[in-house]
Length: 78
Image 1 (cartoon, rainbow, N blue to C red):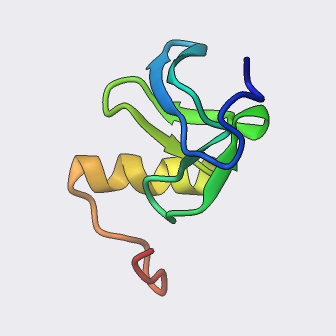
Image 2 (image 1 turned 120 degrees about the vertical axis):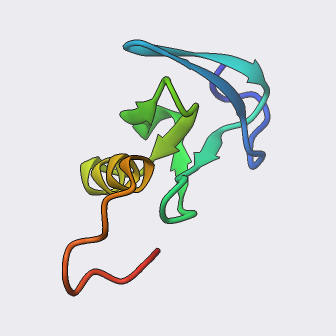
C-alpha cells in the first residue's frame, strides 16, 4: 500500500506511534523545511498539529514555534 501513488504526496492522519494513509502517495512534506519525506522514512510527526517533520531538529523547531518561543540565536527561519 505504501507504494501506490508513486510520485504523489500522500494524505495522512497521524496517530500516536503510527499513521493512517487517507490518500494514495509515497511521500509527505515537512512542515518546517518543506522537504519531501518518503513514507518509509517518516519517523517524526505531531498528532496535535497533524504535521510531519524530516528530522528531530525540525520537530523541535515546530514545538518551539507552536509554543511561541523564539528560534535559537543564529538559526534562520526555514
